[in-house]
Length: 122
Image (tube, rainbow, N blue to C red; front, side):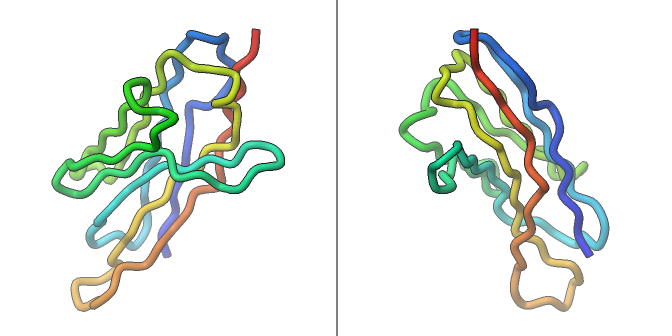
C-alpha cells in the first residue's frame, strides 16, 4: 500500500506564510500528478494546485500568485508554499498522488493523505 503523510499545517496571521509538505511511502513505483486540495468548513473540497512529474503546475484562481507547488521526484515528496495568507485560506489541506505500485501496473491509483489543518487568523 501507499501512504501519504502531510505536515506543516498550523496557525498563521493574515499576510503570513506556511509551508506544507507531503511524503509518499510504501509501494511506490512511480508517481504521476501530485496535488493539494482543501476543504473549508461548510464548503466542498477545492483543488488548490497540481504538479506533473515533469514539473508543470496548475493553480486555482484563488491562490495564483500566492501559493507555489513543487516536488522532489527522487524523494516522492511535494511541497506547497503558501504566502500572503488570507482568512479564507483556512481549511484542512489534503495531499494526493496518482501512483503506480508496480512496474506492471497499467493504471495509476489515487491516494490521499489524512489532511492537515491550516488556520489563518489574527
